[in-house]
Image (cartoon, rainbow, N blue to C red; front, side, top):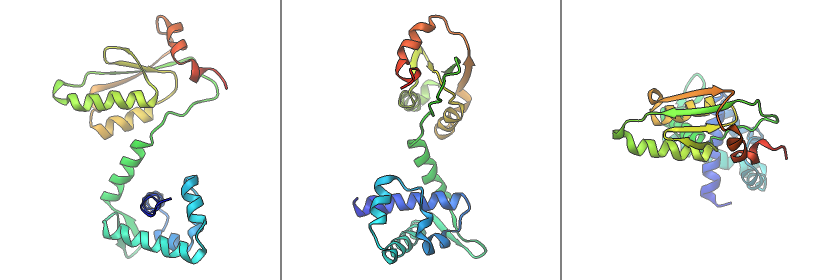
Length: 191
């Protein structure tokens, strides 16, 4: 793993810990606190000896303070800044997925929207994100998915600042349901 990739992954992990209220200073002293690292990152980090891990974490924390992602708080050590929260929000938005339950509840989730023409670019970003989340186009400004995804849609709408233009509906019946079941066959069929 390249040095800049490791730094970026460590920055994200330290931000997550800071958001959860963990003391970032304690993380520098206890590198084992970073147990939630993704596998390639964890493998690269574990290849370092304990002293190198401590130096790397201290370097990353210093970098984060320099970039104003963390700020010194005399009562709590270090705390996440507004810039740090924005980075986390962007990271969470990019990694957003809809969890797949073991059994489908038979309900359909519809996302309907009427985003004004002066927000055409935002509308394109929104429909692209819906497609990436696994939603399927049903008809003009109406997308469908079989699994619970209200929180994910709320997060996307808040990020794009379009909440007032989007409606989320849960329904047990849609005409021509068999066509939709066929379109979502890969998700609805147990592996």
